[in-house]
Length: 101
Length: 101
DNA sequence: TATAAACGCAACTATTCGGTTGCGCAAACT
DNA sequence: AGTTTGCGCAACCGAATAGTTGCGTTTATA
Image (cartoon, rainbow over all chains, first blue to last red; front, top):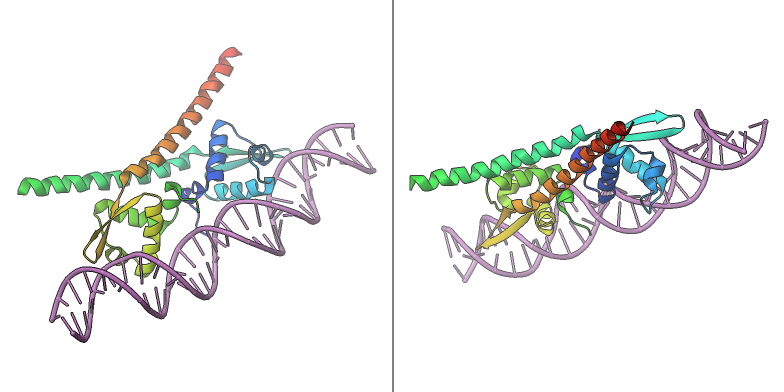
């Protein structure tokens, strides 16, 4: 099963979880309180986010706190930036072509 | 069926298509040449990309050229920026808290 | 005019996804 | 000690995904 940041942010619920965790670390239960679905459903999303290394975990007694790893979010930035460069270079190439004519 | 940019970039093949189209507009056939899968499979991805408005279409005779709509890519930037602000504000709030002590 | 090329669309298939319910276990109250 | 709480894990289910093959249609070419 391939897991990456892009898959992590594909689901709207997962994006909401990421946003909540950006605000503060939370337990699955606390997170589930913000959604209509069950705790187990949220835990499944958390599992995916953990596999993508978007989220890290820290146990405290019987409670399990999840933290957002903002570092992983940079992967998206990197991809976007690379795409932007290709896109811009394309126009440069067109400029060069036009200058030659 | 919900369609947005985030779903568009979730699939690695689709990201590759986006990258290729960033370089230059192409036909489904030309795109398929860069992959192992069939033209129909690529066309399916293109259909999804079109529904997400990531790609626009222009027919020329019997050939169908697809163009990247970079505007849609900004939606990702916007989401990332909003997340980054929440993340940074969080530390500001922590600073405020510490200053109060 | 016959043939080949480029394409979209439909049907089918296996796998993954997002969700549910129902456990069992360990930590924390009472 | 007994009960409640928080959690992960497994089984199950319907829907969506990503891919295939097989058409029909339109446009170009011989």
